Length: 497
Ligand SMILES: *Cc1c(COP(=O)(O)O)cnc(C)c1O
Image 1 (cartoon, protein in one colour):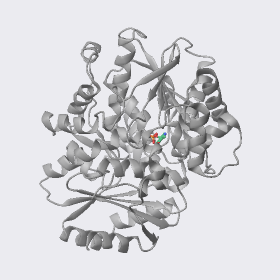
Image 2: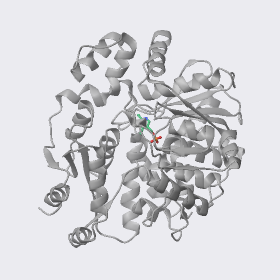
Image 3: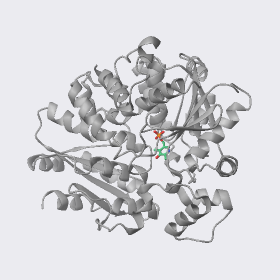
Image 4: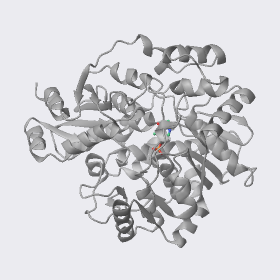
């Protein structure tokens, strides 16, 4: 399978090239030239397979220049019961007869990004080898929280790769910071940058575009690459769990073969919900996708009106991984919805660049609304949902999952009451202990994050995720700190010494 650019500005490339490049060098994102369409019979023939077998099966379609052995090897290294403490990898729990929560947080860092970032390093490593390059890959990541730790854990001790994460010194939570600076491994580096997230992101972009520096990097045997969610290598692993969930529901006799389900996804960069859409395009029986947003509800407004307008105030919420105004992967979705009309994509994104907004035509708005529902939850509604779920079902959810369930509730008030729903749970509740505990108990005086985690544990007596249980006692391994103008010097110090 070849990959083409959403902007029609690049010759088709292989999967490994798309993963190595990350994004189209001229601008635009790589998408599969043609999504494989499978018959229901063919899909159902996999229903008794393990998660690892389902993963290999899906990946083989999309990564056609990888051989089966390479894929199987990568899958087994990523999805085993050391990395994911659940036999099913992404288990489903239910607390009413047609709501199934898919727990996507059993990986090493307690966020759903592990599902992609545990696998992707192996794919990247193979992709580089296929291209005949003998350079060591240097992954540069700017993070505002979850991605940094998930990438560090994924790339830790992977042969032929070095990973450098930049985070804003005062822009991440104490837990997130501790998660990053306690990471072991011989190839991991973490740099605190005096500045905000944009400063980190700009520093990375500047370095990617610095021709002289790149030459120096190459002469020293290195090559830069990226691990953020515009890389196809991060999307394709996420298609897998939607099939796994569907098979689980059939085996539990919750649904009949071929019956359609609803899928609710708490959405930020539109990656996770786009993976679900690709599963649907492959033949997964889906009735509706509920795209759940927090108060940064740019996607809700877009789905309803067809107008994408970033000229609005950015809000900091208790579901920070969804605090996003530019949902990068929406571009891929629009490219699919318009049957690969790259001219229109160029036009819309030019408008976005110049005017901070674009508006799509009514025909396409209608097309999107046949399949997608856009809902959002306020901070109050999210907290209330966390509290209700805990009080009624003795089950803790994190704020991102709270947004998703609140949005599903709003949709279900008037539609599809009897449909079976799969709801993505994207983070373990202990990762956001403060917001969760405050939702249940009201405002807290306690400021110490570790004391709050323990309070939540004491109050609810629910199992704590291992990523957080040990964190307080882990030793700090990374002390690098620099100003936003000295990032290049810091990276030189890492690579050339
Ligand atoms: C990244 C993230 C999201 C958003 O996922 P997208 O693929 O960017 O839409 C939601 N919840 C959590 C906990 C995340 O870390």
